[in-house]
Every structure is written in structure tokens, then in C-alpha cells.
Image 1 (tube, rainbow, N blue to C red):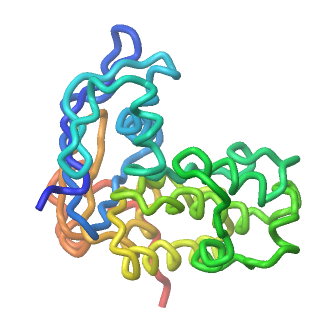
Image 2: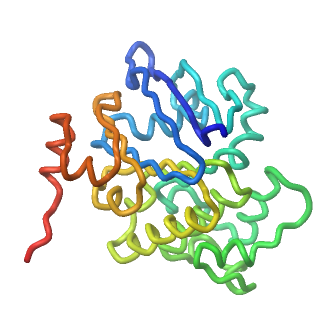
Length: 253
């Protein structure tokens, strides 16, 4: 069986290389967390895997395969058929990702029509991400949603076409603690119910520890350590990983 996602890539902005032969795999049904400090290259990696980095002035070399299909070298029109269908994407902020003047129904219809014809039925999809599937909610404008509702709607977009792998780039960074916990639980439930493979990108190690099957630590454009959360957080080997773990907040007795 092919991995859901497999890659080995380098990425640059001009003459500055920011990802240095970064390699990774995600098996079907596996949640891999990519953790590291801000500026370590996490979001660059997500955009590179989606073949979108050129819109930020970057370039990518190497190999990216989804379910055994090589993506590097595909035309932009071919990639548009891949994004959303083979690779779902959940950005970090509904405030910037959603057009606040459009109705929820319109946003869903636009996302649906990218890969399917006819009218989509969105009630079950919305309910799967713990949103109301009724007409009242569908007729709300994105600007009327709470931040938590907006983030759940972005997750609905990401899983709409049942992609092989879902990339979630800091999906809880804009949320309060209670909403963050609910969204993390939602990701875990979607993984268990649908078997969706996920790359969960975050600088929040507590979130990483709660959701992932495996953790990759990204530092200065390289993955310096990889392993199960229990091993990473109880017996880190790389000096940078040890410094991250030492900086984690501890529960007070």
C-alpha cells in the first residue's frame, strides 16, 4: 500500500534555502505533527507540498507523492484538480481565509464546484464538523460566525472531497483555549471515523502531544528528530528538541 503522502524537498526564496532536503512520510490513517519554532519553515513546507510556494516568490525541488502519484512537474491546471481532492488544506485563520460578506452556502458551493458538478448536500458535512446543517446557518454570512465556527467551516472545506491527506497549518493558533480543545478533538474524531491521514503543523507542543501518532521536529529547515509523542516528550535526543520540551508549561500540583 502506498503512503498517503511521501516527500523529500528543498525550498528556497531567491538564493536563500529555507528547507534543506526535508523528508517525510505519512501512512494512511496516521496523524503526523510537525513542530518547531516560528520561522523554522513549517508554513513554507505546507505551501511547498501544495505546490503553492511560487505565489510567495519561492521555489521547490525534489519529490512529492500522494498515494503514489508524483506531483512535482504537474502543470498548475493539473494541480488545481489535486488540491482539495487529493490534498485538503486547513489554514490557520478564518478571519483572513473567509470572505466575510459571502454566505456559508455560497462558500460551500464554490468549494464543491471546484471538483464536482451539480448541487452539493452540505447538511451532513457541516454536522460532521459540529456545525448546524440547517438553512439558518447556511444563510449566515461568514462575518457573522464566531472564530470557532469559522475554523470548523475551514475544516469542512478541507475534508469535503475526502482527500487522502489533510494539511492543517496552525489550525488552532487563533482560538481560545476551550475552542482549541474542541477543534483538536474534532480532528481526532475525523481521523478515527474517516481514516484521514493528517499533517498537523503547530508550534504548540501540548496540542501536538494530544493529537499525533508521530512527531517530526523541524529546526532551521531540517527535521532533526522524529518519533512517537511519548518518546519525543519523555526522552528527547536532539539538543533543540530538549530545549523545546524543557520550555513546555508544566501542570502545577
